[in-house]
Image (cartoon, rainbow, N blue to C red):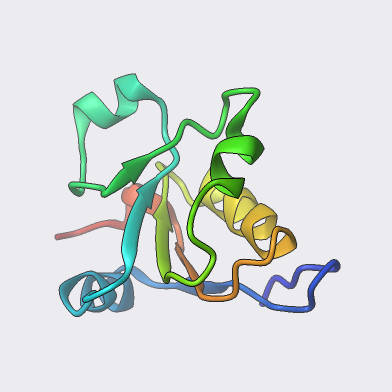
Length: 108
């Protein structure tokens, strides 16, 4: 499991089935899409927040988020969302889930 060097708090890679369950039971969890606007127009899970990982101010935007919340993070393949989760761990977020394989593995 990936682990942040800075905090030692690992984010969790979860398969689509578990990510789907987390979405269904997310009273306080925030669904975070880290894809580009054009990707979002093609397919969306109805994210609460969309932050383009490729933007130069991505880390600054993430730093503004509430660290006490649970985040369900996804992208197209799981690569950008995995990197986003690592960054979030380094910034002090402790309850972060990455959609393993991204939307490419999303059957729902």
